[in-house]
Length: 488
Image 1 (cartoon, rainbow, N blue to C red):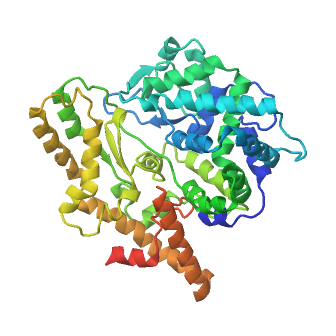
Image 2 (cartoon, rainbow, N blue to C red):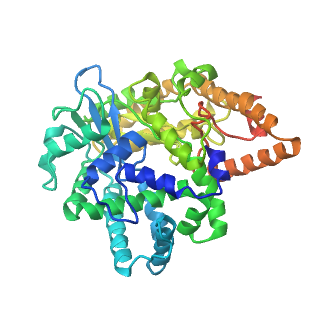
């Protein structure tokens, strides 16, 4: 997928617009159907891994409750990045960027948007960013779990039956959800923010906004060069940012975990640290290239264009739901952005990105000092930062807290990490280097190797992690020299 994105030269606007239309996103035309914005958001987040306002996952039932499933609603981590891009465009120049994007995706390039429409869409974007990102500025988050039937008590903008019906219509899981199934919310402020927007804007206005927000994030799927130029306003900057975009599109955004809500006493905080779950991908069952090949056998390796590649890959992801591989896809969060080590408060789970398993945080065959000054330090800092004032009230508790932080690290063993880094680098060396040699002369190979190194450096500096699904096994893309260093 990465190569397809980097080498695409022709426009695939028609392909992306067809995808958008099939899933309730119509732009720059106005929507003509009566699909509700909630249905659009549920469909994109659950079925296509396209998180606009939030992410939506189906958590497996726990050992304590085999019947009730949990719908996990969490913020879209990319929303802050999108708002920063939006803010980089002065309002006076937004009209130009909007008009160029309008012409790129409109059927008639001679039609220009009205000033009034541009201002309305600008105001809507600004308002949505402000409302949805408001909760992230708060230090104290309030997680909650509730049956679907209780959602209606938190808003007058919609009702629980509509939300349940919309989820069933778009998630298509068996058996269908009932209003007794549970919703796990990482922060109630997020839920209230979503309902606030639903209650303050007309459905068609929200639909137009969702389509524009989608294009701000994914317009480059249709035409990487042209769309990035429109969004960034500078040809050189667009060329520099293209590897960032292409690298991120090969990643899988995933997370999973167990329910935890109790945070009332210091003792609970200590127990919480003792019981925290550390997530490493992949599970032991998949620690061979052969197992990974089989797991991702249904992912396409070819497509007529990057846009088709993008759509097919996301369709394959949806096909993993309910399988052992699907559960693995729920084991890790998005590895394309910082932070590499993240504590997920509501799940009592610490997610360690594959991107962290590299210098300066991790060195192959490193000493125990690495756990205190590198990866282990980041690990402990995330756990301690996750404890609120109720969890660490008194000085005498710190001894127990610190003791348990490093006790938790027993899961974070050198062997577990080494197995995964060797698998990922080994897979890259054995298969992909061979493929490069077969498809290029020595001179071309050197050029491609240099390009890969440059892209890897750019992506890493920007917080991106080169991983690819279409190669079936997700691997850490590094130069041959660096891969050899890891093998030494």
